[in-house]
Image 1 (cartoon, rainbow, N blue to C red):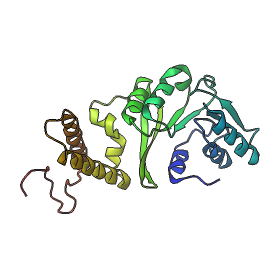
Image 2: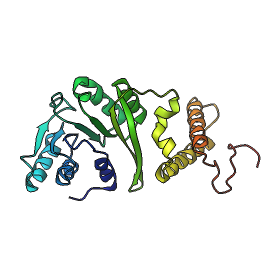
Image 3: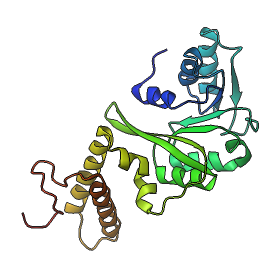
Image 4: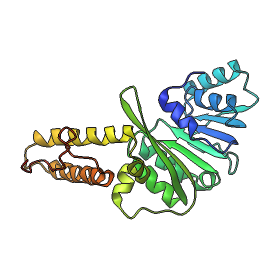
Length: 242
């Protein structure tokens, strides 16, 4: 069962060794791989749509795992019982939806030993939700796959809060680790925002929002000790004289 680089990175963050509930399981490949590799003692493949769930069911049966992996139609964790899964895994959806799933049935979410999450947008909402639920973010990883950047978080019960809003926006762990993929990502974000600002009229209200984002990106680069201009290794802000 071949997984993409992104899904391999997601699967690698599962550490509980117990039952894994894969929320939004799609084709079911991730939960199948986890059980086959002995990283999960069992699985619960869950999806809100019948089509993906039927594909997952077929793949699970083809692998002879239908006695080990249960298949359930479910909106988020609705069909999951409290304490039934040691790991809750959610990937491939937006951060706003993931936040809603995590918060909707708090007793189910907080009964898990670990949460492995890979939101595709608005990741700051997920980080804030985790802290509100009484989880700490033990590890974050950024992976570049097929030209796109993905963030994977592993969270475990514990009290944690970030004082700096930058940590919620970009991830304290990612900033501290300075992985090659994250450095490339933050540089691309800097170039993207500067490109938009260069072509945006100065009187547009949206310009202020972009300028704030640009300042935040430079702050992240400062913390990681990355030169603003990597070609000359000169650490100057745009518009400043050479």
